[in-house]
Amino acid sequence: MIGLIIRQANWGILGSIFGAIVGFFIKIYLIDIVGLTQWGKYASFSAFSTLMSTILSLGIPWLIVKYIPHFIEIDKDKANQIIRKCFVYSLVLSISFICLIFSFSSIIDQYIYVKINNFSDFLSLSAFQVPIAIFTGLIIALYRSIFKIKEIVLYGTLVIVPIRAILTFFVFTYFNNVLYFIYIEIFTSLLSLVILLLLYNKNNLSLFVKRDPNFVFDTSIKRYSLNMYANSVITFFSAQFFTLILSILLPPIYTGVYSVLLTISGVVLLLINNLNTVFTPAISKLFKANNIDELSELYKKTTFIVNLIAFPILILFVFFTKPILFLYDSTGHLYTYKYFFYIIILARLFRLSVGSAGSMLVMTGLEKYELKMQIVRGFSMIFISAVLYLLFLDEKNTICNFSYENFFIGIVIVFMLFSLLTEFYRVISLYNKLSIHPYSKYTIRLILLSIPLFYISVIHDFDFAILDYIFIPIFILLLYFSLFYKKIKSIYKEILISD
Image (cartoon, rainbow, N blue to C red; front, side, top):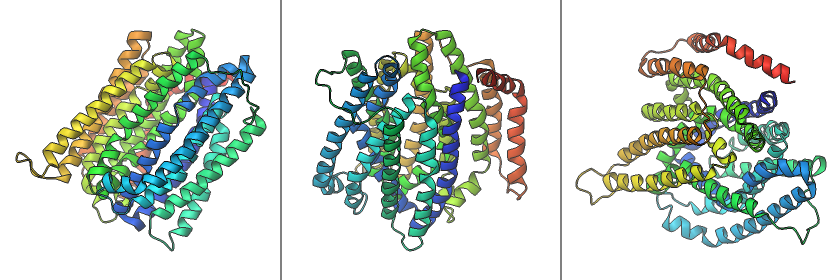
């Protein structure tokens, strides 16, 4: 199983690295042209569109990943009917959203996004972006359910990302309005969706089957779908709440800064996200077969592999904070937020240290614990944000001065604290219910090695010579991989044997 997961995840990681590298240069190029304020408008649009697509997805991608692998093996007709019904629901909801957004975009702009000028133009474009995102999530879940990550990477990344990059460099040679980047995203996303749909329909299950009037969703499927729908909405709300609140309460430049810091530090999350695309259906299979020991061992190994790759990358991000942030903003304004960047990096370390804990909960019948945690987290975020608002944004408050800056500081610190508490809860829940945890002795050693390196990288204060950009990464990478050479070798041998 570890061999299958690693081989398929490698395709996802390859695509993510390629997409991240290209995206890195595109964003540097774009932000230099449009500025942090316009980029903040784009980040606000992106958060709104993603929220809407999450709400309208009905948890369908999770339903597909959990049940389609099982039904493909025992009842293909039922699998086809499930897929057909999922497409019908998605189509109806997409059409409804298009009608609603064109009717109410000006009202949303006027009464919610009061800090952003002319945001209705952005909101109208979500009428195209959101339906594409809904169907893209559905088709990607179908590929994941049959362990075909390669096709997602080939046609969703390796083909589409270069097209998007070429169009971006060409268009922004003549324009400086970030709206044009959204036009490009809509076009390339639609192209990717069409390719993936046609190939899946041709090479795998048919997506256009005749309706079976006797088919109904099993009660267990409905219950799981509703739980995961609530879970996905609340999880997104918890993850994107601060971006949404910054979009509504602060000028767009703060949303732009926050978005850039999250984007840079979030590169390493591509590793765990791509691992989850393969590991999630594997969790379901092993759990249904009651192979808890194998699942526990697999969880530890995947956590170690992800952290071994991600930790040194994050350490290097902290070492080279100044040149990285100056790449995005040559004025130096972004660099004034370097300590916020360190805090966000720390939050990413918490997230990576527990591996696929969230996926483990939702795929082993413990989704209600994940849901409860996300509900508590969501309401806590609302409460704390309200307190921060009263302290720093209420002009009538006589205790603290009106300050966008202090509100922003509070949001970043709370983001880090919630990351720590969320991952702690997930690990404790898994251990209490299944006696499973992500920490092998190698992962613990890896964490202990990273703590002093993170501290050193934060407190350093010197200018880099050109050769430092070569020697420091080589030294840190060699340090990590040499200390864990034996474990890496044993995992590599296991993958070869599983071939």
